[in-house]
Length: 251
Image (cartoon, rainbow, N blue to C red):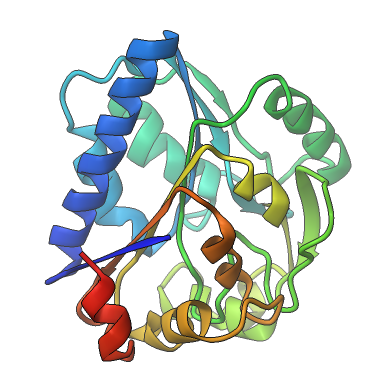
């Protein structure tokens, strides 16, 4: 796992987008198509803004999969990740081949349909973040490191739900759904490349726990350390609690 620390979230997003764009161009050149997994949330704002304005990406040859979504939330809701991806990625790039997780449909049927499409070929690059509780996608601690299920229905813990409230997506805690559809940990790790984008001081404890503590289901994103082609992008605030040794090894 490679760690890169940038001065601020905008620089971090731009650097991550540069790597992502280069990876997509290379994959499209070699294979003629590319398959990606897209994350959402406040942590991805600068990254997606930079990526969607990157030149020379054949977005019409890119197939996109959705990382996670709330169960029962309509796309009209400001917190809908389907809405987020339409507004911040799909409409800006013109991607036509995408698989969204409809929060209003039967979760089992949604999982069946999207999992079937996902299993057709490997994922080339996955874009992910890390939650304040260390979650990866919506796999809160203790995360299931064993399941091979591409997607699963998960129960969101209070720390995760409070993060969504704190980011301004919901008016009150009771408005935050208690269940979500999430890509499984093992499925995320099957991506040929993972680019993890983690800004902000509120993520600093999770960053330290996941990248300097034990690899454990109690720190779900710690599992990224087992992947041979993962790059983690931090800003100076999210990296603030890392040891001198870790920072010295970061580029």
